[in-house]
Amino acid sequence: MFKKSSKLYSIFNNKCPRCHTGNFMENDTKFGLIKSMNMHENCSNCSLKYMIEPSFFYGAMYVTYGITIAISVATFIIAYGVFGLSYLYSTISIAFAIIAFIPNTIRLSRILWIHLFISYNPTKTKP
Ligand SMILES: [Zn+2]
Image (cartoon, rainbow, N blue to C red; front, top):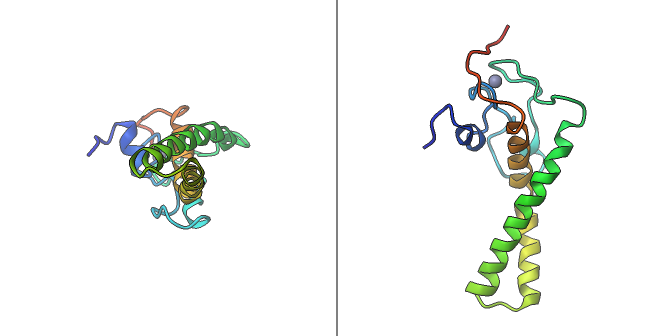
C-alpha cells in the first residue's frame, strides 16, 4: 500500500523509523492492553535505540491527546449525527470508544512520536 521509504509504511506496519525493517513493538497484535504495548529496546536490524533519552515517550502523551480528541469528535458525529442519540448517550459512547481504543492509541502515538525525531536511513546497519 505504501512504499517502504515512506513514514506511513513504517507507522502502519510496526517498523523501525530508521531502517523500516526491524519491528518497533514486540507484538503485531493491537488487542490486549499490556501485550500490545511492549516495545523492543533496540531495532533488530540497525540497532537503533528506541528510548532515545530517559522518559522519551512521555512526549507521546501530546500525540495521544490529539488522537483522543479525533476519536471523540468522530464518535460524537456518529452517535449524535448519524444515530440521533441524546447528548448523554453520545457522551457515554465517547467514553466507551476512548477506552476501547487505548491500546491502539498508545501504540500509534509512540510510533508517531519517534518518527518526529528519527528519519529514514537505509544505509545504517548493525555494527
Ligand atoms: Zn532499524
